Image (cartoon, rainbow, N blue to C red):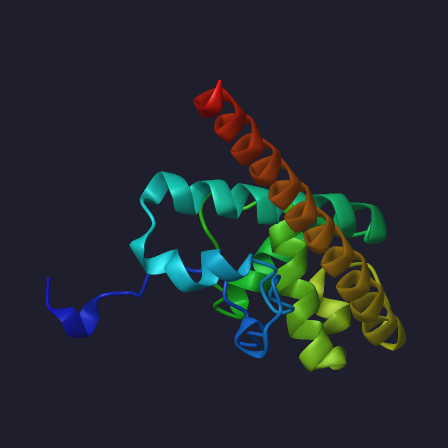
Length: 160
């Protein structure tokens, strides 16, 4: 295949990376700093594991926030706006992309299928951002605690 016609692989990148400023969890995509740095070297299985964690966070936050959203309308909206999502993207991931488009242009709210008025787009986005970042940071801390505990246990086993 000609390289000019290849479609770049999807990444979780939201184009607002904060890991360059020292954040351990990116405020844009909510990947851990080491995941951002090593993404292109990850195997497909490693990338899927990251996608799953991120999508679970989106499902956990956005699905309860946007209870009046209509799946078929959201999917049609994303299709019309030419937003690429993974084939197995979760409901939360689709809601995220629709909300992100509306956050940039709240006049799209009526056609988005999100079930919220234009005046509620910004407050919904802000609430989402705060909740999902808090969840992502807690996920990072838990992963760090697990890794640290595993490392200590491994050292103890070697020393015994």
